[in-house]
Length: 79
Image (cartoon, rainbow, N blue to C red):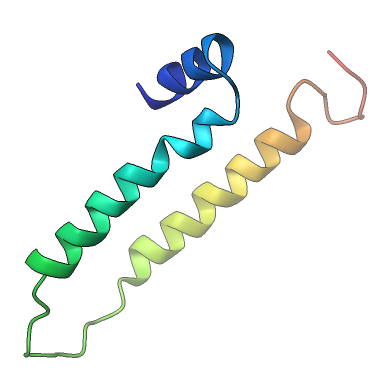
């Protein structure tokens, strides 16, 4: 919904209002965090998920290759 609302505001009101609309949302979020967020006192050392880290790196690498080579074959010419 965010991109659709942003496009509507930019087209029918003015493009600068896209930035102003975030001010009241940010103020509300700040007060909600300030009053209702409670940090736990207990801290513990977490284990590193190596399988998840490897999967994340592999997926980002594939995504980067897809964006870089998208629409081109391996010889560099457009399809």
